[in-house]
Structures are given as structure tokens and as C-alpha cells.
Image (cartoon, rainbow, N blue to C red; front, side, top):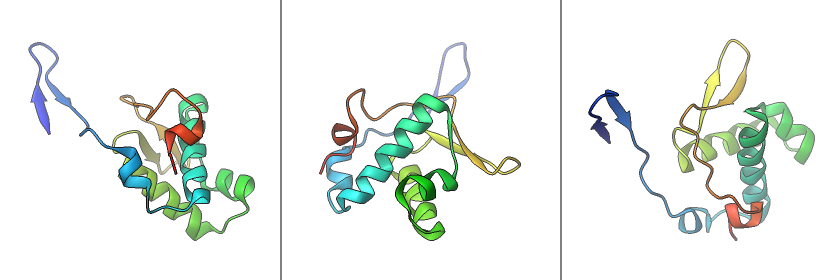
Length: 107
């Protein structure tokens, strides 16, 4: 959705999402990985697929799938820097929650 601000020009707004409903079909390990992505991007400003390999001992395809799922659930939160091959926090990043990871992606 595109809204036009009075002085600032176009402003993109993210649709409101019910994270509990959207993650109910995911396994607990998948929700844990999504929470890890959220927290790493929120506090460190970036995440690489390698970070998921190292932390969760998963394969490249699973890491790519988790990052794509995060982008789908939280559109506009991360972007990909192809030069550095890293996902970075977007300027308009909105955390899904200020609470612990289990609250962020409930089971």
C-alpha cells in the first residue's frame, strides 16, 4: 500500500500481520531460526546464511528457505546486499516483538 505524506513524499506501510497465525504451521526449530534471524538483524544489523549454518547446523537450502520465509512474514525488514552477500536491516525495520524469541514466533 502506498500513502502520500504531506511533506515527505511517498511512504510505504507494511500490512499488519498476525504472526501467531502465520507461523502455526512451522516446526519449533523453524520458529527458533526465524527468531534468531529477527534478533541478529535487529541487534547486529545483518545476517548471512553462514550464521544459520554455524548456529543450527543446517544445510544451505534450509538457510535460504528460512531467510525467504522471514522476508515473506516480515516484508520490508531486510534487504540483500549482493556485493557483500549479506542480508541487512532495512531502514524501516520493525521488530515483530520486543519480547523474547518464543513470543516473537510463538508455537
